[in-house]
Image 1 (cartoon, rainbow, N blue to C red):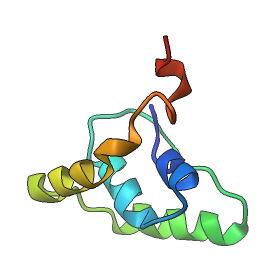
Image 2 (image 1 turned 45 degrees about the vertical axis):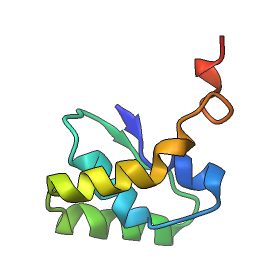
Image 3 (image 1 turned 135 degrees about the vertical axis):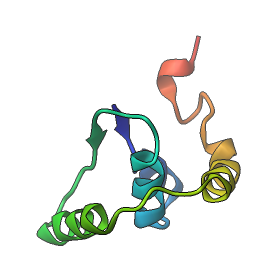
Length: 80
């Protein structure tokens, strides 16, 4: 499983669809997509209905853009 929007929450926003599509393109069995408003549910449903897997170049570009987000300051469970 995976939380696709945690980085957006911590880093102040971004392209929700890009993150959800990235997560759905990975070999996962569960994706947790949180919502606070009915509009969030509608947006998530729209993304899921229109979903097409991302290509390798798109996956690599988003991973590179967010690489600095995966540190122990953000991912508290990685602190040792």
